[in-house]
Length: 369
Ligand SMILES: [Fe+2]
Image 1 (cartoon, protein in one colour):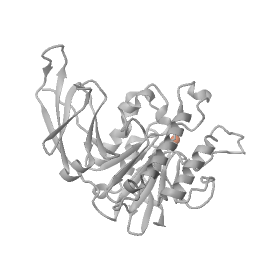
Image 2: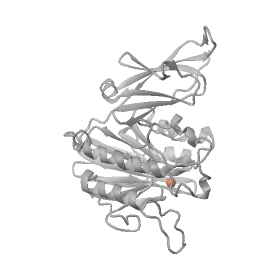
Image 3: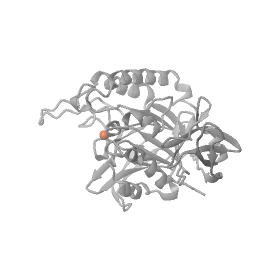
Image 4: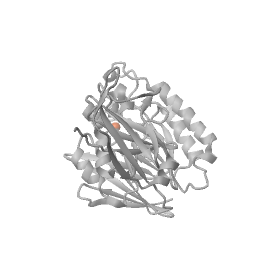
């Protein structure tokens, strides 16, 4: 009898959890929650030939059940009477965020392939972890399926399928053969990488800048079209504001944050180098900052991309568009290691610790909420 490893990752998005399970064999797979079956099918046909099996479970359902069972049968698909191995089932417990404070979030970004170090660094909170954020550039490209699977691999190693995760897309995730198939590997919400999610008292706006240079840059050889995508994202943010009472102004929301791989309040212009190629979408990103400052008023933002750890408040090198909330730069690769960011949300403050793979705190900051 053949088996395969089942390593689920519970990704939070909109009103759903997307349970993502990398698979190494062709199999029919279902997830059961409270006895109800959720299938991975396309227009009625169950998917058995894929890299990642994905299941959308309503948030409320899994939050109440606090457990799910994955069942699979390895299949040898034929036109009629396909052959199958005996079914295998595994049950996982799940811990939704139910606390009102003392919420532990760990943020990793810009791992750039340092798998073992990232798993050690991201294990800072151990069983106290409430939410894992993998904020882009976990691999340096998506040239292979293995690189594209790395965020899920790291997320499982840290959460064991028991804690919610938010997995965003970084600009390096758009580079390679599998970039056009990234939706097969990453959680998407309504086919987009921008969405909102509410986890207990925490409301998150996840934004996606795509690449860091203009669409016509020679490196991309015409493979990307992000200008219009970012304009659609502007309309999405406007809609979030229109629906504020169901979003960030909902009565159970205490903490509001924005999460993006690229810190879009930063116009990356270095006159010393004479390089202007990162100096893009100034009007669009300025509009995003204005909408955030004037309407949404997040308590803080979590960002990666610049390979720094630290908290920035007020105008400065990484904030020339005037983003009003503290900017947490939470991912730094260095030699063979990775630094990440541990956020603990308390009633009126957030404790920010920047930690290494030995769980030593290299710097810290308390911000008011
Ligand atoms: Fe990046």
